[in-house]
Image 1 (cartoon, helix red, strand yellow):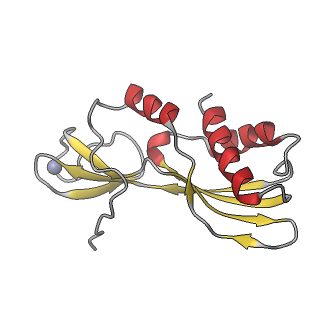
Image 2: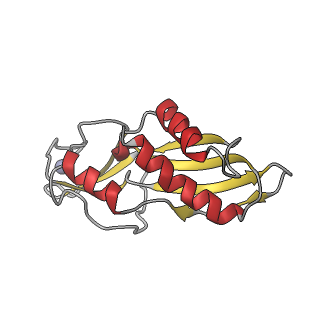
Length: 150
Ligand SMILES: [Zn+2]
């Protein structure tokens, strides 16, 4: 149930943005590399948010596909699901340019105020989790903008 750890990270960010105001909606971006089950994440968030200003908040989860840079053929491909090998030559020797996001995009307060201040809800625990499940050192550039072709 690593969704609980992610939910707690999200909650922390939401509460810091909301500053005690009651929250209605939370828009999050979750990279597919987190292997999150959306229902489970939402459930975990509701549990974590009990007795906080975000107790009634609904989570809208947007999945972000993995963008894979091949270290063999240098092609850049996207993959919506595992295995995260190169979509061009099939090599497993790849770096990820996207797909490990965990981002609170925006929150909406119960009075209708939208606060769009994208903030990462990522922390060490999540990276440890990723390293457990992915080839070591498979992750490449962090947080850099990647030109999307096509
Ligand atoms: Zn390749």
